[in-house]
Image (cartoon, one colour):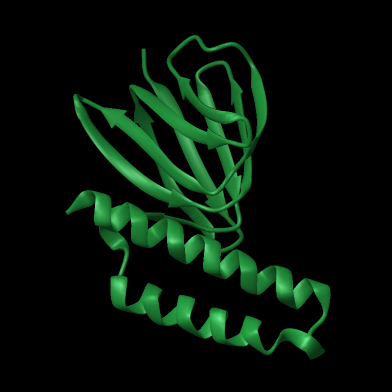
Length: 135
């Protein structure tokens, strides 16, 4: 019996498929979810989601968000998510560099702008680590 996994960001649905299991990075550590898992609502930490299907693993980078498991459906709502295969390392490195430069000159920025830049740096780091792991 599979689990239906759905990952949604503000831009739209990033992933939707029936899978064998999923491992998500929560603020208290990684949580593995198999069919028949107890109901769960948890806060996600930025990191890698590992999806297992038919004996193969697929990784996705995800930013902070929330995960809910009810029955055999897992729903993930995050600011950002991307499949490891779709990560453009050069683009990510450039975005991280721009955000780090902007943070150096953050004296005149609002707290929200600083938080957004810090989030960009963290998500870029997650993507770069995940891509490096896949080599």
